[in-house]
Length: 428
Ligand code: GDP
Ligand code: IMO
Ligand code: MG
Image (tube, rainbow, N blue to C red; front, top):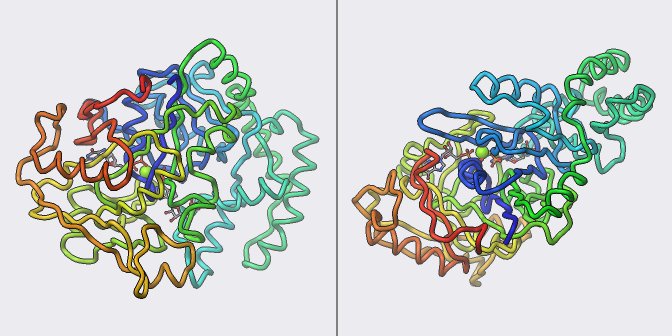
């Protein structure tokens, strides 16, 4: 199969960045297709750490990288990330980075709205506060400013007027000061010459790439359970995060997604609010967080931790059409005497094999656990399945059975090469 789509199969932070970086030397182009700089993808290469939020994780390997139309782009953040990564020795030029000219922009007023709403809400979502939700609202509300508008002063003026007609009453309601239309226009006009050199019809470039037989690697952000339709709504992000979005968010067409590689953490974490059936509030949860360094890249918040939830991942396998998974952070489970895996839920007297959509059912469900023996040996840094203890292999095999998908890759540390290839997604 020519292309591979990498998506998070849980609540994000599964290790997508590490795997995309690892796989990108097998691809010709790496494409982000949704989300924005709410993502935080950490890559470790020979001890050097790169933290990417908006740039596709292929840039570190020098691969052509595309920010697709489905991404919401904060242009100020983009420039600062280009500068930061440039400072680490990765020069980002228009030869390396393409920004879809039809992608929508995140403006400071989106961040203001995101943060003011979170501050005022009785039931917070726990967003990253980066304006993602309000920017997507303006996109579907048909009043967003898009990358191509930066080249057209009269379009910008008209769009700013339309945007402010919507935002001014909202801002006043939240006690925020009015936005100065002239100042916003001037800021965007200052940005334009820095952003426009990267802007191109990305769909056209991808069409040419596909026709010439080259390979595309799609990089998802967030995870399936944060998907605006399929996730734990309303505690979700504001984009479709499932693999199907790779097509709409890049303009490649539905056959382009190829092999769908779900990235799955060997336990479960979540940042922000919302249901989490296998969450642990005890020493075990604390140990997972400490061993796994579970702190958000973007906000620095401690990630909530819990046992592996096979019922949720099985659901994710169906929602994404997952062909195979990369199981990450197996090393974090080293030294546990026993491990629990959730295989379904009890709601009232009934057993459910999937996570229900109703809030009442979600609040009352209890996980049904299966217990597996742990291992005392270390898996950290293993690069061959022969280096894995028998019980670690058993854990992996049981996960495959429970979720109904095979393991294609195993990850045993943050380092790029501490990765075990079991079957090549580009060849499968
Ligand atoms: P992403 O958002 O899916 O790209 O994941 P993040 O980068 O936010 O979070 C994953 C974290 O785990 C990062 O700090 C990675 O360096 C780290 N990581 C990735 N794979 C492994 C692994 O197999 N073992 C360990 N211990 N850490 C890993
Ligand atoms: P990566 O790509 C984990 C969560 C936020 C919040 C919810 C909505 O690194 O896996 P938003 O700012 O998107 O409106 O917040 O989504 N969230 C993530 N959680 N990993 C991410 O990205 C996330 N991006 C957003 O914590 O609960
Ligand atoms: Mg992350």
